[in-house]
Each structure stands twice: as C-alpha cells, then as structure tokens.
Length: 322
Image (cartoon, rainbow, N blue to C red; front, side, top):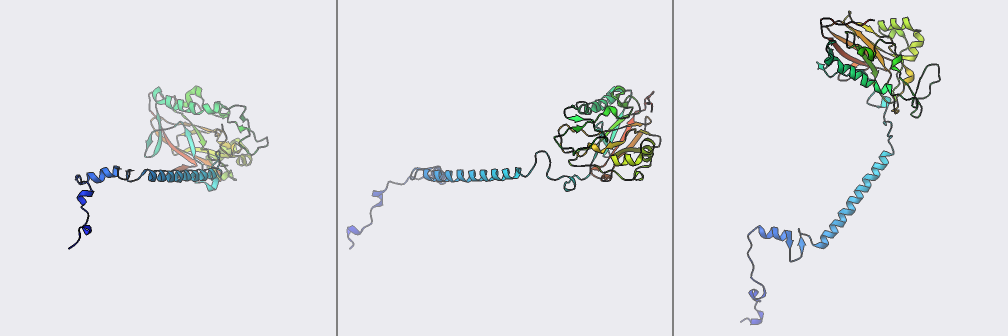
C-alpha cells in the first residue's frame, strides 16, 4: 500500500477556486491589462520603454538621412534657372501667345467674337489688353534701358539692365484711345513669343525663306540683308482675300534675347490690326519665322497662333482707316 507521503497534493487546498469568465472576454480584458505581470496591451512597462526608445532613434535616423539627401540635392539645382534648358529641355520650341485672351473655343479653335455697337462684348477685350500692357508701362529706368543695334550688346546677364520694350514706339494705328479697334471692324491683336529660358531665336538667312507678302514688306521698308540678320519675324495671314492685315512692324530684334528669368523681363511685342468684314468669321494664322522655330499645330501649337474673329453684322459698322 502506498504511503500517505506519496500521495499528490490536494490541489483544492493549494489554489483558490477558478472563476469562470465568458469566452472571449477573458482574452480581451487580459490583453488590455494583465494584473499577473502588470502588462498593458501585451507589453510590460520595460518592454514599452525599450520599443519606444528604439523607434525614436529609428525615425530620428530616417529624418536625418532624408534631410541630408535633401541638402545634397538642393546644392545641385539653381533657384533661378532650371537644370535643363535649350535642346536638353522638353520645351524645345517657342510658342506664340496673343492678346486679348479668348475663352470661347469651337472645335478646339479660339473664336474672338464681338459687336462694335455693344459695349458689353468689347470691354472685356479692351480691358484685357490694357491690363496686359500695365507691366510694360511700369518698366523702371533703374532696371531697364533703351537698346539699339548701334551699341555693344552685352550677354544679357541677370545683374545687368534689361532692354526696355516701348510699345508706344511701335508703328501701328492701335492705341487705347481708339479702344484697340474694338469699336470698329478692325480689331487689334498683340502677339509675343512665350518666354523660354536660355532661348535665343536664330534669324533666317535668306529673305526668300519668308512668306511672299512678308518679303514684299521687308524689301519695301528696310535693307533686306541687314534686317534679316537682326530680326525674327511675326507675320499673320488669312485665307479670306478680302481681309487686310495691317502689319507695320513685324520684326522682333534679337537684342531682347536670351531670356534668363531676369526679374522684370517683358517680351517684345508685335501689333497687328485686322481689317475685316462684319458678319463673316475670319480665320487668322500668325507664325514666327526663324531658323530654330518650328511650326506645329498638333496637341500644342508651337511657333504659331491660330484663331478666328467674328464681328457682328450691325446696322452701321465702323471701319477704321488704314
């Protein structure tokens, strides 16, 4: 017979009776706070302290590493000029912008429509041109200077004075006093090459490379060889033979270029006046003529502007004098 000393201990005497807890509640409450080992969310205080220190050091290292990379990266770029310009840039061809701004689009074509006798349809165009020219009227003598071909042209650095653009000296009948022609059937269009950093237009060598009507203008008003060497040209044409284009100063002197993001720089202008008939929609195409300027009309126009003008057929339309 086994002795009483070899009997297993009476568990009921050594441990308190177990308290039955519904399934699920015991595991969740114990996970939140376990009084047996004083753990919160499965971790003791020491464990929480260790993991907190680890992640603080880890994220401080990541922040420092990212800051170091950013500091090195910003040393390689300029805040004034992009890294890639000219042929290395995705912008290889200059665009031609015009004013007034036109919001109306028909078949992806800009339509400039107005009624000379209705101030509501003309004031937006007139105000848009006047607003655009404010920056030209605010050129300061401390930052801009008159430029001519008789002086030695510098490198157009950012710290030198810019060539002033005096639109008042442009040979044109367009003026704020006549509301830029929008009270008549002869509206004015202002054209300019869009800014492209480090872009310098290259003139065409032969006058015969230009449209016939532009050739005639240059031969009539200037020495062709000298004019071709000093200018690129903006010239507008229409398929409507009854439309007369008043283009007295189509040349853009090359001394305005290159553009290097100089503060206060304004693009040179060409002003065209279109004499047309009321009640007819006239398509106008303007192109820049230079050796390194390409004319494209796919998704994005380059080197050209394409728009239509419609003047309402009022009872007594006004026609401006040429």
